[in-house]
Image (cartoon, rainbow, N blue to C red; front, top):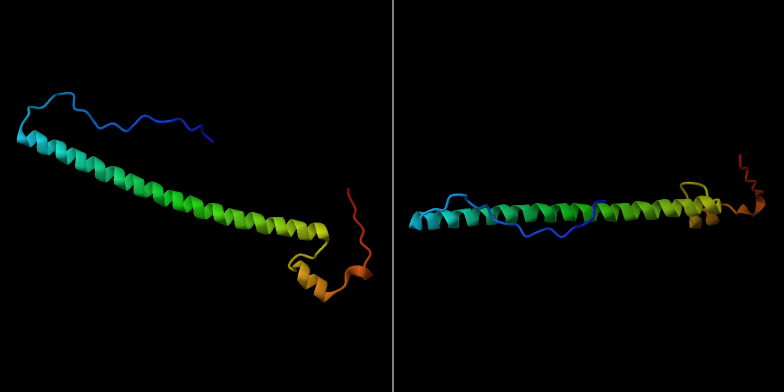
Length: 104
């Protein structure tokens, strides 16, 4: 993951040639500001949508992690796959079985 550095504020584009102070120049400045505002609003909306997708994905990963953790606990306890602890306890008593673990 990349380190998070504080970024400088977003600056508006500056023209290299100063314009004459006319009404048309003022309207051009207004147009440029409105256009930049719309662009930034669209960018913010895209970031919010991406954030929502990331949050949903994190929730799915949490659920999958919990399910995998439960499966690991069941396998460690010797419960057959596909059955939960309560189902296996009600179905067959495991007291009649001898369990042997082999490592190789």
